[in-house]
Image (tube, rainbow, N blue to C red; front, side, top):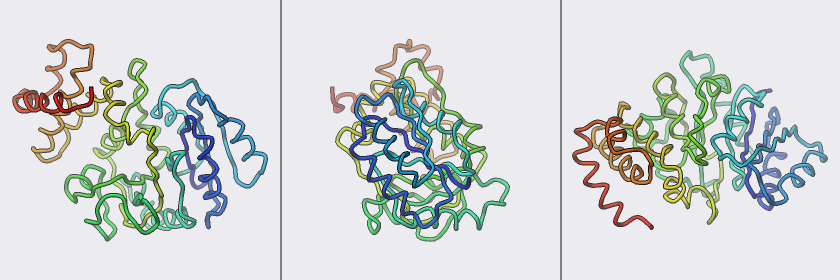
Length: 289
């Protein structure tokens, strides 16, 4: 199996068919679709069973207790049989030639020792990229450099070797339901690189009740995961100004942690905290209550 398309699903029965229909018409069909249902309360299970009965593509379905997208990803990685792992959310879909483009790019670089996979662009449509177009040519670099050196903005579409992703599982932190995927991508960046390309291979639609639009409140309710991400980001090889921003966000969400101030301050650079702790107060005043 060449590629596993992985979808974490939570109460998205009405939107799953659009993604399904985009998969069955892919110009490259050497893939499986792994769906981990994160405790949906709607008709997701029956909807997926209908897809399976149609026998148009290979579908693996697993239902878990509601635990969060990051835990669903861990399960999906364990179930995956594909050489590559491609996360496609339940409310999004793929252009008809997306997988063909991805595999063509991957085959050109797959024998490079430190390549983790390939990464294309997400778009609001097949012609309108999310973010900026600061890089138009293929670039071989890690996930930190594409953001902080090449200044690419907007959500990206990572397709990673499944074996590598198995080396970097998402940690389970208490009973928190959210942990940004950036934590794992940046951990991988310390050892591996991606081929970044400018083709749009993923169409995203941000729902009003989705993770993207509810970003602040979700991180507020999962503060330990949020501060872990910003703690690690401060130690990454990124510009000083970005380290300070990470420190600001560390303290912004540390306010919702149950840990003591003494414990929290030990985790971060004290020099950055001189700026970060004070400036985080501004966000605390402006943030939704």
